[in-house]
Length: 112
Image (cartoon, rainbow, N blue to C red; front, side, top):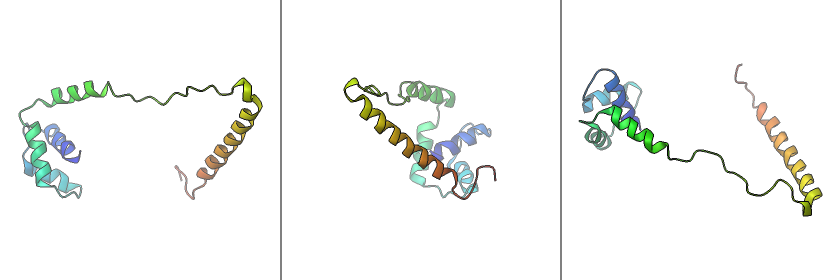
Protein backbone atom coordinates (compact mmCIF):
# COMPACT_ATOMS: atom_id res chain seq x y z
CA UNK A 1 0.00 0.00 0.00
CA UNK A 2 2.81 2.41 0.75
CA UNK A 3 4.05 2.21 -2.83
CA UNK A 4 0.59 2.85 -4.24
CA UNK A 5 0.10 5.75 -1.83
CA UNK A 6 3.46 7.26 -2.82
CA UNK A 7 2.56 6.84 -6.50
CA UNK A 8 -0.76 8.60 -5.93
CA UNK A 9 0.97 11.40 -4.01
CA UNK A 10 3.39 11.90 -6.89
CA UNK A 11 0.49 12.10 -9.34
CA UNK A 12 -1.31 14.58 -7.10
CA UNK A 13 1.93 16.56 -6.99
CA UNK A 14 1.83 17.03 -10.75
CA UNK A 15 3.78 14.06 -12.13
CA UNK A 16 1.71 12.41 -14.85
CA UNK A 17 3.92 9.33 -14.89
CA UNK A 18 6.04 9.11 -11.72
CA UNK A 19 9.41 7.42 -11.95
CA UNK A 20 10.97 5.05 -9.44
CA UNK A 21 13.17 7.83 -8.10
CA UNK A 22 10.13 10.07 -7.54
CA UNK A 23 8.46 7.38 -5.44
CA UNK A 24 11.71 6.55 -3.61
CA UNK A 25 12.10 10.22 -2.68
CA UNK A 26 8.58 10.32 -1.26
CA UNK A 27 9.12 7.14 0.74
CA UNK A 28 12.56 8.25 1.92
CA UNK A 29 11.06 11.51 3.23
CA UNK A 30 9.09 9.47 5.79
CA UNK A 31 11.91 7.05 6.60
CA UNK A 32 10.93 4.08 4.42
CA UNK A 33 13.46 2.20 2.31
CA UNK A 34 11.91 1.17 -1.02
CA UNK A 35 12.02 -2.38 -2.31
CA UNK A 36 12.85 -2.16 -6.02
CA UNK A 37 10.84 -5.26 -6.94
CA UNK A 38 7.62 -3.99 -5.38
CA UNK A 39 8.22 -0.49 -6.65
CA UNK A 40 8.66 -1.68 -10.24
CA UNK A 41 5.53 -3.83 -9.96
CA UNK A 42 3.41 -0.83 -8.87
CA UNK A 43 4.85 1.37 -11.60
CA UNK A 44 4.29 -1.36 -14.20
CA UNK A 45 0.69 -1.91 -13.14
CA UNK A 46 -0.29 1.77 -12.96
CA UNK A 47 1.70 3.33 -15.78
CA UNK A 48 -0.39 4.44 -18.72
CA UNK A 49 -3.68 4.09 -16.82
CA UNK A 50 -6.03 6.87 -15.82
CA UNK A 51 -5.93 6.81 -12.02
CA UNK A 52 -9.48 8.11 -11.73
CA UNK A 53 -10.71 5.05 -13.62
CA UNK A 54 -8.57 2.74 -11.47
CA UNK A 55 -9.96 4.25 -8.25
CA UNK A 56 -13.55 4.12 -9.53
CA UNK A 57 -13.23 0.47 -10.50
CA UNK A 58 -11.86 -0.26 -7.02
CA UNK A 59 -14.78 1.53 -5.41
CA UNK A 60 -17.19 -0.55 -7.45
CA UNK A 61 -15.51 -3.71 -6.13
CA UNK A 62 -15.66 -2.44 -2.55
CA UNK A 63 -19.39 -1.84 -2.77
CA UNK A 64 -19.98 -5.59 -2.90
CA UNK A 65 -17.94 -6.30 0.26
CA UNK A 66 -20.16 -6.96 3.29
CA UNK A 67 -19.32 -4.60 6.13
CA UNK A 68 -22.22 -5.01 8.58
CA UNK A 69 -22.11 -6.69 11.94
CA UNK A 70 -23.23 -10.23 12.61
CA UNK A 71 -26.89 -10.80 13.37
CA UNK A 72 -27.86 -13.24 16.09
CA UNK A 73 -30.49 -15.76 15.05
CA UNK A 74 -31.32 -16.83 18.63
CA UNK A 75 -33.87 -14.87 20.64
CA UNK A 76 -32.71 -13.04 23.77
CA UNK A 77 -34.60 -15.36 26.10
CA UNK A 78 -36.70 -18.41 25.45
CA UNK A 79 -39.79 -19.35 27.46
CA UNK A 80 -38.26 -22.68 28.55
CA UNK A 81 -35.23 -21.04 30.21
CA UNK A 82 -36.67 -17.59 30.89
CA UNK A 83 -35.38 -17.09 34.44
CA UNK A 84 -32.00 -18.75 33.95
CA UNK A 85 -31.24 -16.87 30.78
CA UNK A 86 -31.96 -13.48 32.32
CA UNK A 87 -29.77 -14.23 35.36
CA UNK A 88 -26.92 -15.28 33.09
CA UNK A 89 -27.40 -12.15 30.98
CA UNK A 90 -27.24 -9.94 34.07
CA UNK A 91 -24.00 -11.57 35.21
CA UNK A 92 -22.55 -11.14 31.75
CA UNK A 93 -23.55 -7.48 31.68
CA UNK A 94 -21.94 -6.91 35.07
CA UNK A 95 -18.70 -8.46 33.82
CA UNK A 96 -18.77 -6.22 30.74
CA UNK A 97 -19.40 -3.15 32.87
CA UNK A 98 -16.49 -4.01 35.15
CA UNK A 99 -14.14 -4.44 32.20
CA UNK A 100 -15.25 -1.16 30.67
CA UNK A 101 -14.58 0.63 33.96
CA UNK A 102 -11.12 -0.85 34.21
CA UNK A 103 -10.31 0.36 30.69
CA UNK A 104 -11.17 3.94 31.61
CA UNK A 105 -8.29 4.38 34.06
CA UNK A 106 -5.21 3.27 32.17
CA UNK A 107 -2.99 6.01 33.56
CA UNK A 108 -3.74 8.54 30.88
CA UNK A 109 -6.70 10.25 29.32
CA UNK A 110 -7.52 11.17 25.79
CA UNK A 111 -7.54 14.91 26.51
CA UNK A 112 -4.89 15.11 29.28
